[in-house]
Image 1 (tube, rainbow, N blue to C red):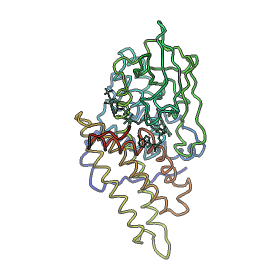
Image 2: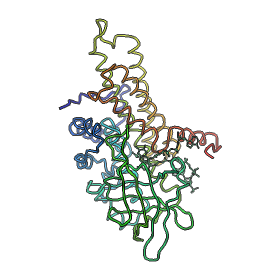
Image 3: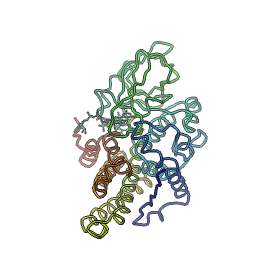
Image 4: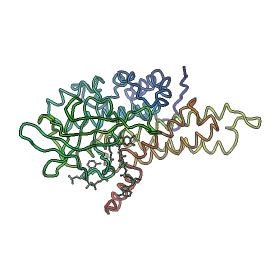
Length: 392
Ligand code: TGC
Ligand code: FAD
């Protein structure tokens, strides 16, 4: 069995900025990843399978609804604790963090914020415990960066809604019990609907052949005249702002998560550089390798500070969507660059599953694309600072 030797870098003593509760939550997640994720995740990624055996563990560390109130089964934690949990999970694998992000921010969050009290009571406790897994259907085959153009639609049939359309690239779809689906009504207004597995005309074919996020299950959502009960409509927010509000929460978690992947690659490369001997000395003694390590820890430290500050702003209810975009974009690109440099530092060993680096590197190819691409987040920052819209 693989031993996880991870030691978290904290170059600027950021632990001093955390409360005792933050550290307890973070350390519990860290220990769980070491014990239950690291030993198995490489095999699951190689097999292109999600390890369903870890679902109960994710629930136990509070990864399903960290900030959802305890009365609905959530952990009732603050935004920094939420971020730290995502960091630790993604330190293990971005695909596992995806499952937690989707469950918390894209399924539980809209039910909590936009749903009725009956919907909250029916779904949230089961989602928090991991008894049910959910997925989020926004992206369509012809509408990815531009979700406002979606064609999935529903008609009011009097005693139920009739849903038609298709969603693509949906994390958790192949095994999810419920899907929060975004669709247009007859007036073209976007609403969220809860679709349950087993409803006639609803299918979730799996997407195969991914080179990235292999330990996460991805699929389509197909709606062929699906009868959705009226009580499954999320009534309290409509329009594109509703799904985008969920994305704010998920993107914030990804900003933290990416730091986890970067820390893991840095830590692995640092250890390897001190142990691997070439030309009679450790490769870490060569200036070129030191440059890589020095730049990695600098970038990780900058991202840690950016993200911690964003967490404080979110706790105060002051973080803007554009600030979240900046952190998601910066941190994922930072992590991707660090993984690539770390992979080179391990030479041939860097391409094997003996080490986590190549898996992280490939995973981040999805992370830089989903939840808004690198370019889309740059345009969000561009719009925010200029007031000029370059999207369309
Ligand atoms: P635009 O006209 O700018 O906005 C439409 C309405 O939405 C509001 N809004 C937001 N509300 C909350 N949070 C945000 N971040 C918001 N951004 C915009 C806006 O105020 C407006 O409201 P209202 O009341 O005036 O109608 O919309 P647009 O059509 O120009 O598009 C803007 C754009 C491109 C930024 C947006 O559509 C976008 O973010 N595109 C990227 C799509 C995306 O991120 N998809 C992610 C799919 S889910 C996923 O990838 C899950 S991965 C699995 C995992 O997480 O692990
Ligand atoms: P496109 O929108 O076609 O973009 C292609 C390229 O064009 C990109 O480089 C983009 O930046 C660029 N581009 C687009 N518009 C502009 C513009 N205005 N200006 C400049 N450049 C532009 N979606 C869900 O709804 N739920 C999920 O659970 C989910 N999980 C996912 C899991 C994985 C593994 C992946 C890969 C994707 C997932 N997605 C999910 C979909 C993801 O959100 C989309 O892939 C993403 O939003 C980009 O859409 P697209 O792939 O259609 O690319």
